[in-house]
Amino acid sequence: MKIPMPNSSSSTSPTANKRIILLSPRGFCAGVVRAIDVVKIALDLYGAPIYVRKEIVHNKHVVDELRAAGAVFVEELAEVPSGCRVIFSAHGVSPAVRTEAEERKLNVIDATCPLVTKVHLEAVRYARKGFSIALVGHSNHDEVVGTMGEAPDCTFLVERPEDVAGITFPDPTKIVYLTQTTLSLDETRDIVAALKEKYPLIQGPPAQDICYATENRQIAVKAVAPLCELLLVVGSQNSSNSRRLVEVCEKTGVPSYLVDDCTEVKPEWLVGVKTVSITAGASAPENLVEELMAFLRDEHGFTDMEEMEIKEEDVRFTLPTELHTISNLRPVSANG
Image 1: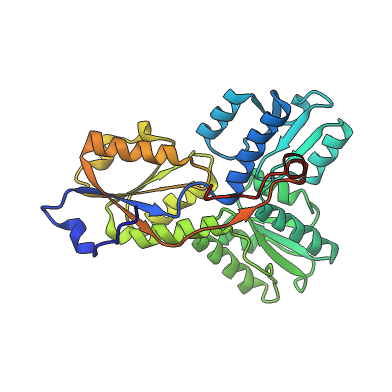
Image 2: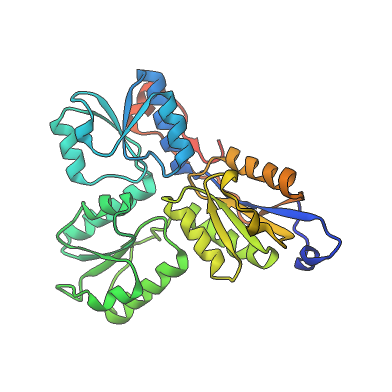
C-alpha cells in the first residue's frame, strides 16, 4: 500500500514511533527478471543440468536458489562439457567468448540484458567508423570486460575523472564515450565533464547508457535522504548498482549500508535512529526486503511503515529468441 509521505518534521517528533520508509522503485529490473526467467524456463524445458557462465545476476540468494534448482554456475566455458547447453549472464560477454562457444559446439542461450547489448552495439558501430572509445566503468566488472572485448584495440577504460589526464587518443576529433549501465549518475557526470574539457569534440551515445532502473533507484535515494537517519540497501557486495546506492546516500551525509539480508544488520547502526529507509538493488529479490522489514519491526521496534514512490516502472523485455520461439511465452517485465 502506498502511503503519502508526511513532511520531514514528523520524522523527528519525540513522540513518533520508529518508522520505515520503503522506497519505490526498488529491486528487480526488467533485465534481471528476464535473466532469471531464462534460467528457470531453460530448466523446465530441458532439465538439469543447465550451465550458466558467471553469476546470472549479481545476487547470492538468486544464484543459490537457481543452483538448488539444477543450474551449474561456471567461471569459464572450459568447465562446460562439449555439446551442452549454456546460458550467458545478464552482464554480457565478449565476441571471444561467443567464438569459443561455437568452436565447442555449445548450445547457447543469451540472457544478456538488452540495455547492455545496446552498449555493445554502440561500441561496434563507433569502432567501425574509426572512433576511439572512452568506456566509463569499473575494471574487471563482467559488463565492462564484455564491452571492451567488442573493440579492444580502440577502447580505453576510464574509471575516475583523474584518469582522463593520462589518456591520449590517436585522433582527438574522433572520440566517443560509452558507459557501464550500472554507474553512479553523479560520478559518471564528473568523468564525462573531464573528458569534454580535455576533448571538446568528444561525442556521446544517442541515448544515455546508464539504465533506467539504476537511475530511478538513485533518484529515489536522493529524495529520501533528508527524511531518514539511515539507509539500508538490500543487495550483494558484488552488485555494482547496489553499491552505487550506498555511495549516493553517503554523499548526502546520511549513513548507508549494503546488506545481503537482515542477518547482516548490525545493532549499532540502529542506535538512536528513529527513521530508517530501505531500498534494494536491481538484482535483489523482494522477499529479502520483506524479511528485513519484519526484522526491524520485531527486533528493533520499527512499527510504522510508509512507502515512498518516486516513479512507476513498467519496462518489458522479450525473452531470448532461443526460448521465446520454443516456449511461446509473453514478454517478461520487472513488475511480474
